[in-house]
Length: 331
Image (spheres, helix red, strand yellow):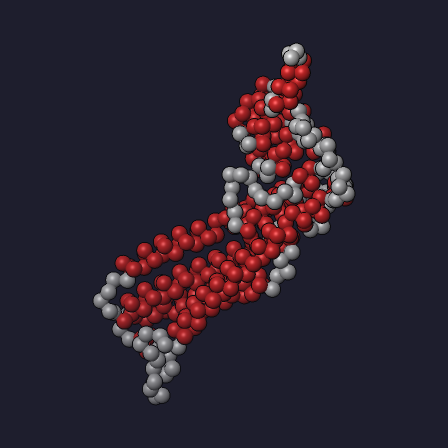
């Protein structure tokens, strides 16, 4: 067998992978910064499918990498480029899923994917929305195909979670509404009294009237907060659950409902503490109140944090591109 050095070198070059492209593909930010800092022209390398590093960052949904590369490369030229299959940067933004380092539930994942697609739409040339790749598909059509299953899962998840939260909001509102007519101390029943029909503790010994007012105030906050939460959840339940609904509408309503329900539960706890103080059971309610509030706060933060993080990013993107020409994607 004759050893062909040229063939060997060709095969080895084909097996060798470009370090910059691999660093972008694996989200190794430090290596990307180091390579581009020493070899700026390396940004023009493309992989075997004709994708440049900006394409790869978009396809990987790496937000930090994408923002960094835009500030370091000739973004107009690279954003306008296409790969070997005629895919634009919009086509590459339609892949389902987030960055490998981030895990979301179906609802938040769908919201992030819609937001990312709209984010790239702001940067891409407007005619890319109507460009078809070699398979004859636009970016919007591919997005719909890739996310049909995820959208159904997200819709089911939101409805199931919403039903459970609606039950909790209804129970909290009902309990506090009933409390208004069974307040501690009852009502003045003497028809000859000038305070007839009013809470009897208002005219009792000093201090109890103020506590009762706080009790009624907390009860009222709990009722109205639970009603607001319930109304917001009904709006979620009646939503069409289209792709664009997951962009701002559904996350905004879901977050509003959670916050309202949190304040409703918090006000109920404070009303309970005031009730213990009014009826003077000899029990220190603070022993139970603060651990309950801490646990409730931790559960609320854990539940609302993913949606809050998403809303901050989505609103920041929306306000950043106000006044700039952009075609809304027909999702």
